[in-house]
Image (cartoon, rainbow, N blue to C red; front, top):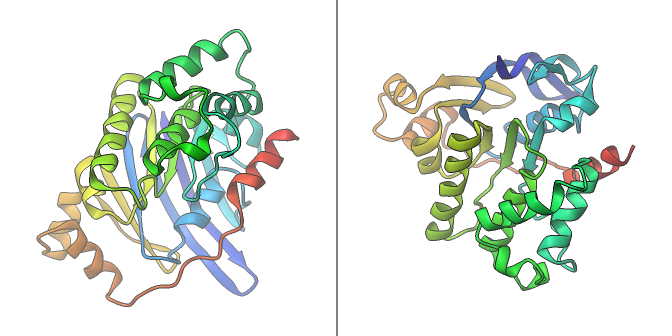
Length: 262
């Protein structure tokens, strides 16, 4: 069964088309990189895949569930690590995990064991009672990943999961993600501007630009297609040298929180 399938997906904001009739499939247990310049349509696509935005047209299924017809069931099947920080700094690591567990209806008798397992997995169990405001950027990112896995999601979405982190912390975080993918079979859908990350870990890559998917395949296939020596060179060949502006993006986490309370 496919983990994600998008068919002829479009999103318009007035006269502006942010996502323009894109289609792609992600195999269960795969690691899928969704790359593009700023403003290309990446965040808008993720918002549609995760029920935050309704598409203007097209169809999305996630783990066999129709995103438009059965959004509540869809939300049970995915976790998400947002690009912007979304932890409550005035709560402890354990309290942040508990709140997420309540929102996703993790059974009370399972929650303590699962929290201990995941905080141990990301090497934060010894800091469980510390306020998040005392954590480094890398520690917060690891906590966000642990939180996103609390309800055993079939699919984990990660929007720029290692942005602003040093190479050592980036490598540390990816080691956790790859282990989770291998051990639990979790499908990983991620965006990044670090081409080396996509080159190393993604089984398949889709590149979106100006709302359209301009290329898709393995890193080797994209490099062969563009006669490039690196994925970064292939990316620039496909999307051009022009500097792009950021997409306008509302606070995704708060919108998701409001939806989960309904």
